[in-house]
Image (cartoon, rainbow, N blue to C red; front, top):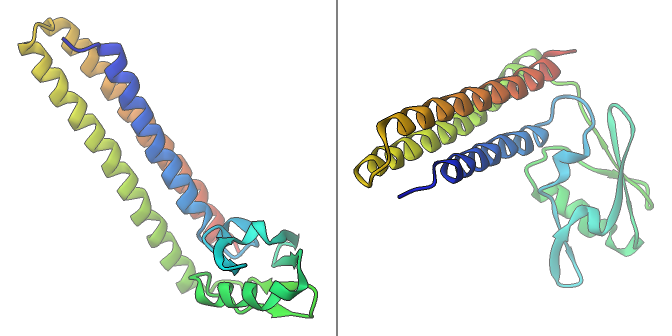
Length: 186
């Protein structure tokens, strides 16, 4: 027989992971403001291995339109530039020999709408994952009835599961709404 509380906790963990996934993905989308999170996926070739950018340089945001990257070793400036060019950041780096600057352009209205669509697509993936978790757990509960779980307990667990589902869908909607607002703000 299954432990209903443990099953619901595992469902909540999986739903929380979907929310964290969405949050991380949205942080990487460039909204016209300088945000160091857009460089999270950049890997620099350093001493024969690929390492995250923040392990070879200090990354900061001196103003809302600029990201400054100050390498700890000046010799790695070319490798950092190459890594940024090869990544999907889409910004050409400028360097003065000591600091690499990324100037974040103001997105056009059309580009903003594209970014909103991209955010919504990622959000829909996360929502689908939450719905899948709900479906999996519902199936487990239905099977548990055959293994001796009372129908009342199953109904209560299903109600609790629906509440979890609604809570996380609302959380995802909130994340998406905040990001869309950030993107559309000029």
